[in-house]
Length: 193
Image (cartoon, rainbow, N blue to C red):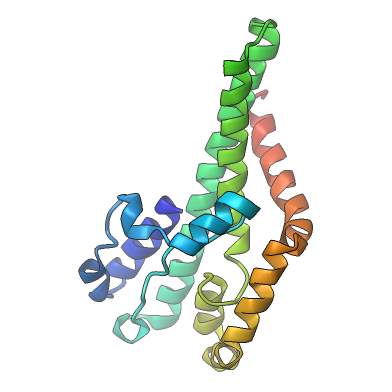
């Protein structure tokens, strides 16, 4: 989440949003980006969120372009980070299975941690496609169609409750899990090419 939010903050800042620096979000310090409830959800249910970056779209030189970049580049960053962890998991797994077949609990723990880090980054990227605030899908929707973004914003609270219930009861994981697993597998297999 830290890299995702840092990239979003950096892109917004570069596009002319002067308030980003004042928020202290141009840093890789996790404490500046964490949201307590989002972190709890991530720890318990595997899906969560960071402290949303407060954007000021009126300050962007090219609003539509800025909104699309602020949406796309953090998504790409999360997928890349997830991909790096997946490749590392593949390399580690190959080492544990073929080079050291008597793998220890340590090897298994490291492999599990790399897989989890990969899937959490990929899952965070995919989850952020949903156009419900505070997720980044709202940035995309507002950038492409401010009218549609405003309509979704009117139902924001109800949509947030539905999303939270979907996370708690596993519906979001059921719907997004296969996509996250498929993307993970694609990157994991890169370790064997």
